Amino acid sequence: MEKLNIPDCKNFTGYKPCYPGYNCLEQGCKDENKFGKKILIIALEAMGSVLMTTAQLPAIKRKYPESTIYWLTLKNSADILKNNPYIDKLFIYDYENISILTEMEFDLVLNSDKSVKAGALTMKLKAKEKLGFGINKNMQIIPLNDGALYNYKLGLDDNLKFKINQKTGQQILAETFELEYNRDEYVFEFTEEEKLFIDEYKKNIGIKDTDEVIGFNTGCSLLYPNKKMTIEQHLILIEKFLSFNRFKIMLLGGPEDTERNKIISDFFKNEIINTPTNEGIRKGACYESIPQVIITGDSFGMHLAIALKKYVIAWFGLSCWTEIDLYDRGVKLYPDGLFCAPCWKKECPYNLECIQMIDLERIINETVKYFDSLKK
Image 1 (cartoon, rainbow, N blue to C red):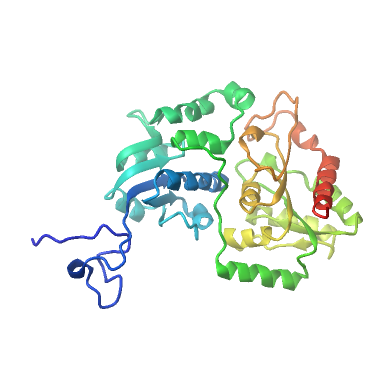
Image 2: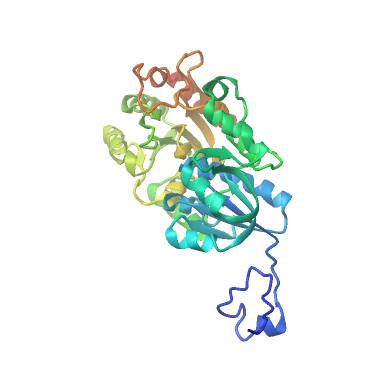
């Protein structure tokens, strides 16, 4: 077979010319865009964790300025990563894409997930270097590099994870991937169409740029249902905020929050704004971009608020508050001194004391204090 000079260029597909009427094979690259280091990130599980992992992208580009970044994730997290300026190609975890990835060759594979599924694929892929997590011959999850060892031990040692560790999730992951940690922010960007939608929606619901808007992310993942505040606690907070006659209230959430948001909204009739919960992640992000303050538990809504650079007031009970970085834009409330927290249990044997202990008065005071600070 004739030997072809296949360009080392991201624009060349081998299917059709990059430019009409231009033959790259014969004429050479018209607009060369080299692959450089070919890097695959594997982050499949938990939408909040996937979004938090985007904070590693700036450090990857600093370390490998000439590079091509691929990302593999599950279908439900794919929309989080769309329009991300650092990602060259997004793959959804399915048979077709796995077959493509296993035929490719990478310089570096970065697997953030401590799961058998992600670890097995990591071991199968062709790469010069693999960092993060894989599995051994007994289907046991293992660290693949020295940098991943602390992260690995964190999952096996409750005392280390719950009592000793003071590192944020971003710092831990930067160490896992052997990257410089500069406290980089999450990376999430709206499209121009989404920006227009946000402006139009604000007009339709009567919100002006000068309005003081508080967003309540009322729920959490069905996997850990005990992260959420009670409906009664939300009613107390919203009633108090409305009594100030200065704030507008928006209810935020996903499909799992539809029913509770309706209950809260019906209680206040036409006094608050109940945003749609069944229009997908990107539209949900559009709605969450409108309030200046987001009140939330440790949930995807919290991570999205951090990505949107909102002022976040977040409460914690069963999850580890030390691992969350609000980037100096917010307050973390946690049950200090409660012996059982954090615990990461799906069922609570102690009548959810951590939720009962949420300081509602402090949430109110911190919110008012923040809005007042904007006027100085």
